[in-house]
Image 1: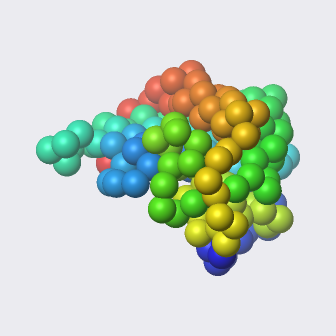
Image 2 (image 1 turned 135 degrees about the vertical axis):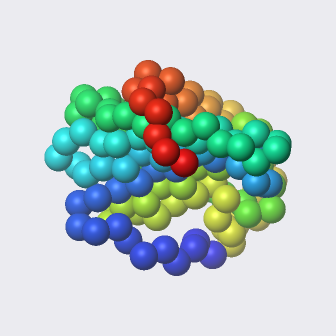
Length: 143
């Protein structure tokens, strides 16, 4: 069953990427914005000893539009809270007024095999979110 998450304020959205899939994240990338402009991005790396390094920045409107198109393509993809069905060791959460989706949701569908095209599309979204963080999350941020 999809998780019940309160939608963000009107027009806002959030995309969160967390690694690894099933334990305490050592990498978390959050992109928060609205459909009309740029977005903020924050990348947090947490080491095994608990120290964190956080970088932040802004994502231009053109890149936001591309990200929204990519992430929107995941709508309706299967998910599982028990295993990493896409084999990427990554969890993506996408939250807008219209869509609340996560590959870590408890999907009522029995997921045994994911189509190669779906795995490829998921990987493309992961790569794009990570590229945005490398490109735009460069300013030090207080943790």
